Length: 466
Image (cartoon, rainbow, N blue to C red; front, top):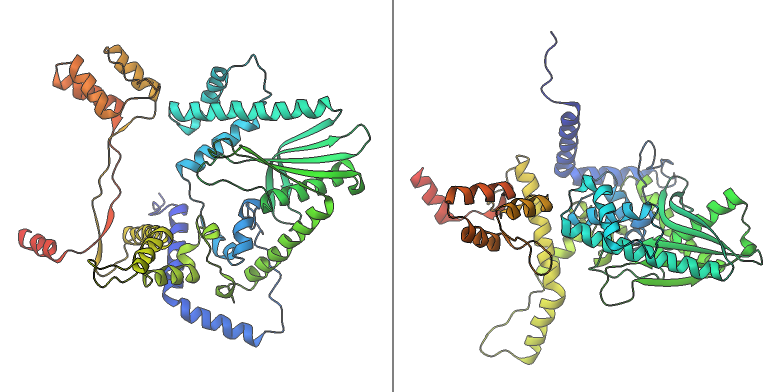
């Protein structure tokens, strides 16, 4: 019999990657100097023409990353190879886009409940709660109605619409990058002229996405036209207008649909600006990080969702410099108007960034400690977690209903676990049965350890008591 492998291939790959990262962290200054020396000696020789897309299944510069890259050209190289972070919000956004892929022609006789039942079947792998599924269904219904109303308006005016849904497009700015267009229409007028329409869905509700000068929809529009020229022999002189739409159904303080129209020349001017920065980003990649720090730009719009913050010297330097901006008030009993304004400005503009940075640092330190690194003065302690309902909301309601307990409040949402405990104690006297029901419908996830500074008193106590 062969000897059993101690580690799987995936575990070995991750260990090797970790070793490479640790080696780079320990020797990065030495490596940087070696690279500088090499490229200075070869300054008249351009870097080798290596494409980051070789043998990769993702875009080096995707349309969704363009806003970040336009602000910080270095970020494309810094983010290359780093895994995407999956959050609850990104899962909901992906789920919404999946619903919009289906044949969602809006018909008055199809009610919201029909959309909800379809969503439950189509998104079964996501384990969304019933309330999340209902919200997704509502916005699927609303967006489908918006698209159908717009389509009826166009066709009533004599437009002949050819629709492209979830179209994988090669990007005009690079032969190796691609993006997926949510919805594109080639609208042919009775005169034979064409109007090109681009529609992009955004499911987020926290930040309103602007359509004007939006590099993502501009790149989709330009690439879609190039696609139509190649596939349908569409001629540019026959295009009278290009309309881009961002539809953000959950946004609260403005209309969900935002439109921007371009002539072909206006679209080309916008596309050319994007191309110049993309060329710079590729140059930085080919240069293998040489001069990378010089082109790193710290900006809330670029840094907020950037995966490379832990590798970015510019970001870390600026965040640490903010800590020195803390206003000093000499005597709290006599605070001048100027000091009050400075403190409040600090709270509004600087403190949120510092708080975000502290969370980021703690997460980074947590990963290092869990991987076995030792950091003097810092350790991991047991975290705490809260009891939660199991993912199957309908099962929770059904189990409690069998016991004569109404677990749904007036807003048609599950009551809190505390409220349900009170309801159970009113109906069921047996303590063991109460516990059995609660254990069936709830669970307590394993708590993540948290980072803490060593407390000298606690440390001494632990040593005495051990």
